[in-house]
Image 1 (tube, rainbow, N blue to C red):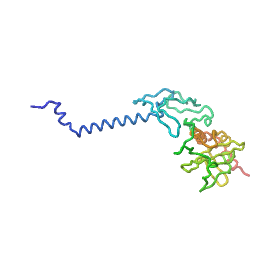
Image 2 (image 1 turned 180 degrees about the horizontal axis):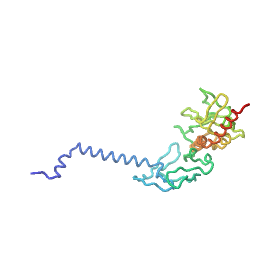
Image 3 (image 1 turned 90 degrees about the vertical axis):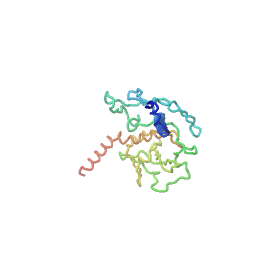
Image 4 (image 1 turned 90 degrees about the horizontal axis):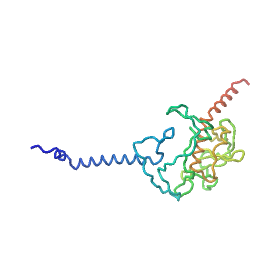
Length: 264
């Protein structure tokens, strides 16, 4: 006599098959959990017109993180939107087209000069001290290799000098120079990211900016530390100069080439 269908199914249902099905269920749940936890920062996503994008996964419930060194708590996701108005306008009515700056892109912080709204507080090391500090306040630091740029003039791509290097800002735990502090001719101070400069024997070259744009580099509030938000703004401004001052740089080189080609 033939056995019922149910008995035939369970006749092949052994411990190995149960383990395999349990692993599949666990792995699918793990993927779902990881993908959902991935949406704690930067979500929910938005369309170009500001509406929320549709997602197959729901945004997770806010989780409270206790920050080190007594900096309070942080909830993610916090569902808070930036209130900053970007000086950009669409180049076409359809989606997918680029946006163009409507003002001074360097000052407005858009395009290649855009910055993220990081917390306006200094990044700390493992002991709760500011990671990046001026060398003038760190007696145990000195220049061990290469040229010391302090005292050298800054030369921009228009071959003019807005000021001189007055100090170096060091990442203390990493023992690296992150920024050069420049004192302008009028006494103001500006910061320049170290990767954006070329140190020569008699000058420090900043090709990204001209001397006029250099003076508009965002300032920092303290002379002893730089916040993460200030780092974003300074680095974005200087790096964005490669594109947004390209027309000035091109016209200067044309004028120089024309002058050199003319007979004496």
